Each structure stands twice: as structure tokens, then as C-alpha cells.
Image 1 (cartoon, rainbow over the protein chains, first blue to last red):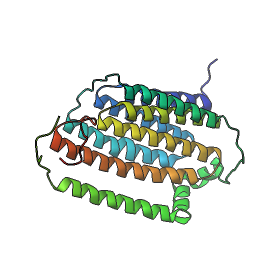
Image 2: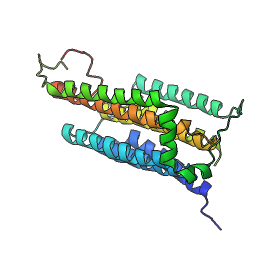
Image 3: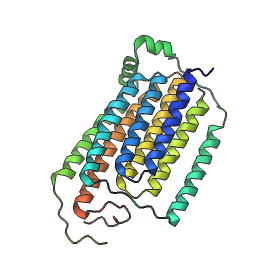
Image 4: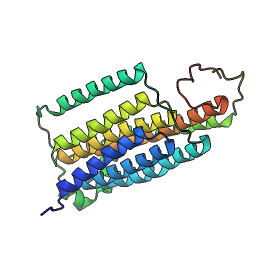
Length: 178
Length: 99
């Protein structure tokens, strides 16, 4: 009898994430690509839940599937989701050759046995005892404080850049060349 | 589920994102492919932080999430500005920096 275990759920979610990723790059219309990308992100968030990373799963849903994808959908609505006609070219075939080579290399790297096994001391029951968000917070504000501060500076720079880009309306200086 | 599965899923989605970035000509879909690649790396980091029983991977994933949010916002603003001046959404036609 087929039984739903942890491994089966992880396997199904992983395969669904791969299929959704194929949907992102194969759909002609950008709006369907965005919807497939949301599906992919939700699959990843569920996988993060299964990997005992509850805080990151919530952040993934709120930031990625919420804020970023809504921004994408607004921009698509603003620009018009024109379909794209794919024409075969040398660039396309060389891109496929490059990516197949890259995938083979990654699989080769995945097949290597671990050279120096490392393990931390945070078993899942420890994280469950103190809570994932609390554990992440303690780690973030003690050992990774500089990275956290740099991330905040990065967000500030992005905000300033957006305001600079959006403030002026650029008129075409000459006719757009074809 | 073993770490081989995490590696293979992550490598597949990274390669799908790469091929999407290389073959698509719509800048919005190219940005989405970059998001796919960042997401696959996030998945690898979190899977390994669960396998190795440490929290460093989750912190890395959080920082990557921040970088991805900043990147996508700036990228969309640039695409919008280009569209305002040129009324064209094909990256092959965007070959001069000056409007």
C-alpha cells in the first residue's frame, strides 16, 4: 500500500518545483510565467517547512510570493504582457549546449563523496524547543551582525536608487532606432 | 530524503533558470529566471543547514532574500524607465545606453 511519508512529500514537492520552473521559462506570456514562479516559490516554502526552517518559509511567502511577485504582476500589467515569438538562432543552441554542460558538471560535483564531514550542534528538536524564529534571531544578531547591517545598508541604497530612477520622467531625446 | 536529492533538485532548477535567462528575450522573464536561480541556491542552503544541523545556511538564505528583493526592485525600475523611453521590450533592441 502506498504510504505518505516525509520522503514522499519532499520528493513530490521537489518534482513540482522543477515542473513549475519549466513553466516559467516555457510560457510565452509573462503573466503565466509569473504565476508559475509563484507556484515554484510556494513549493520551496513548503520544502523549507519540511526542513525545519519555519522562519525562512514565512519570509519566503511574505517577501517573495507576496511583495516581489505582486510587484512583477503590477509591472506586467503596466507594460502589457506581450507574447514573445521564439526564433531559432545560434545563440539558442549554444545556450542549450552550455547549460547541458553546466548541468553535467553540477551532477558530477553532486556525486562526490563528502571529503570532510561537518556537523553543527543544532538538532531539529533543539530548534523546535526554542523556536525557529528565535534561533535564527539569536544567530543573526550575535554571529552575523555585520552581514545584517550590510543588508540594511543595501536596502537603503536600493531605495535611494529607486527614487532617483522614478523621480525624473525621461523624454526620448531622439526617435527610437530600430 | 538524502542530500543527493537536494543537490539534484537544486542543480536542475539552477540550470533551468540559466537556460531561461539565455534564451528568453523579454527582460521581465529574464529577471524571473534570475529569481529561479537565487531560489534554487536558497533551497540548497536550507536543505544543507537542515542536514548538517547548523543555522548558518538559514542566515545565508535570509541575506540572499534581501539581495534578491533589492535586485528585483532596481531591475524592474530600470525596465520601466527603458520602456518609457523606447516603448520596446526586447533586450536585443536595447543596445545603446543613451536614450
